[in-house]
Image (cartoon, rainbow, N blue to C red; front, side, top):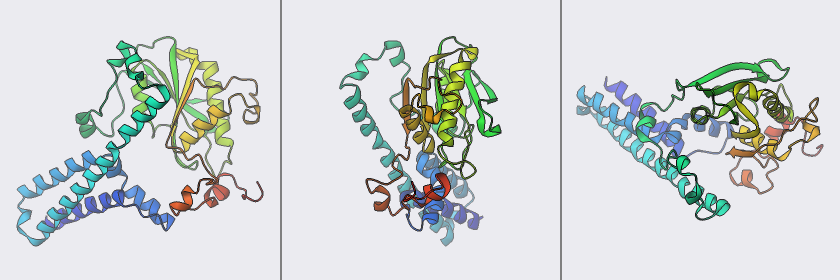
Length: 323
């Protein structure tokens, strides 16, 4: 029992340390440590609760009376410190976002929000639901229509729809593009909190797959995302959507594709076979995307990351010199 307590405490400590201090080199080690520290990085409060649960359970079993038990308690204490550090780091994003909104929309933009909408907005993350159900996004009042084809590339050209059971008419549309470094990812595994949040509020939400590298070659992914917009223009009204109100968001690679979709509206070079379809967006909300593949600002170099090899070998399949 004492050994189990020690191993679990060690696991929590190593995972938390991986989130607090992420080594950059070698690249593969940095990637593995990133994955191992993902939970405390994203959900430090959940990990704090887990620390308390371990202490209570193993304390009741009398494991604190040995040297190994004391070591395990010390590991959990260090983990708790790390998780608090992660929570403080996360909280620092709030003022940055607020300042950006006020710079872009005006210092008193929040006073101009419709009263009915303002009452539904949250200013803080609701802690009890986050603690109790951090991995649960599904809602009973949201309908999911799965695996609709928008292109000819099989499962990679399928999309899912989400809308409120009341099926409102004239709903604005949100397309959420998953991430995964352009080589992995699935429509039902990312962005679900955003998708269900908007679907519950009367939006028609669209979550597509797209072709992945190295089987595909960029800009195949961009063509697919624009093909999704074309599909929405043609079919959204069948599900209560308003094709004149198409918004797009995405994270990581999905953020990059969201930005490019907005910047290449109606560009026939990326719309083979549907050159004349309107692929413009009402608004784009890219999240933590990778936008500077050429590292023109030296960011990758400062962080000791490979500059272009990944994109050249896996995504674009050409050298910087050749193209």
